[in-house]
Length: 137
Image (tube, rainbow, N blue to C red; front, top):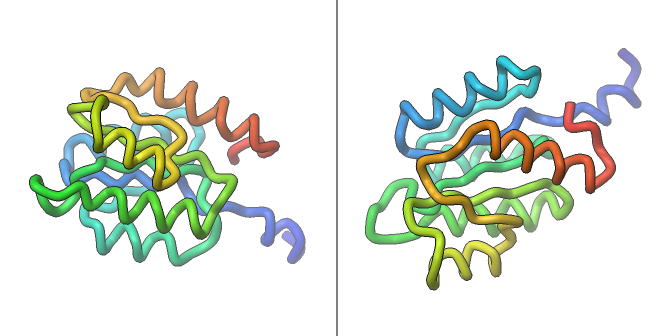
């Protein structure tokens, strides 16, 4: 691999969700479909994961560490600041109201309701990646 090919490589899809089962299911689902993915379980882990190269995409639960504070918004803001063209999907049990508006205001492309339809999430990620001119791999 030459240096140009290395520069085009992107980091795996980041799945930030405090629920180990959900994060694991999403990572396994995407991995089985040829899309590398890794999880972060806390706000700090998710922010640290954003320090690396550009991601294929970012999936973020609005509530990571604190059930009373939508700290996933911090992850969305940082992901959008660092990677303006990367698809960012937020998810939450509640998708209407102020938290969903704030997620979109902070840079989420879409806010999805939990439980997630992984087939739908995959289609959305692939569509958003394609719209931004990258095959997503």
